[in-house]
Length: 253
Image (tube, rainbow, N blue to C red):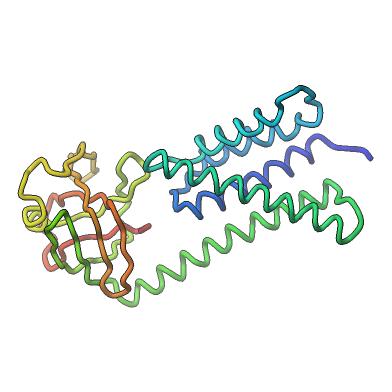
């Protein structure tokens, strides 16, 4: 059977795109296109030259490659978050491989490169479309009621506030942790000690230039309307009073 290198590369690329993207979504990581692309290209290059590699311990290289790909494609809260994403990555990889082998055994023929490329591309497109549809559904549901009741907890202190879903809030701490904005009054109620839970400030672009806002960590944030809870949420103190709202929620929460 004649094998085309470019087909092997593209097949590996789209398979990697599917596996990496699904792994990041399941581990609730923020998706960065350039990071995912770099990791998948690296995996596709290795997958293309893999049939010509013959030496002992090749399985170790494959595992190390998986570790490197997962490390490249996302930013993680801590090592446990990275380890969980890597385990999901391995599980999705083995599951996909089992589906392909099982499919070949069921139909009784070996799938050609064109078929594998078409299937891998179709699966990746379906994944992206599902993500977009789900995100649109969530946004549409939020638009019906942009306000929600929020319970913020720091240690033994708790404050119930009215939150507002703001699609314009694109603030991130360390580039991947969503930042909520709280009113100065809420900060004073939650943090008696000025330095408690305090972290390095982040830069924010305003009409008057770039300004720094203080960021801290909230132990637990509960959406009272739905009962959904978020732990170790990053919040920043708003530069201006928020009026009737106590917190401005992040667009991708």
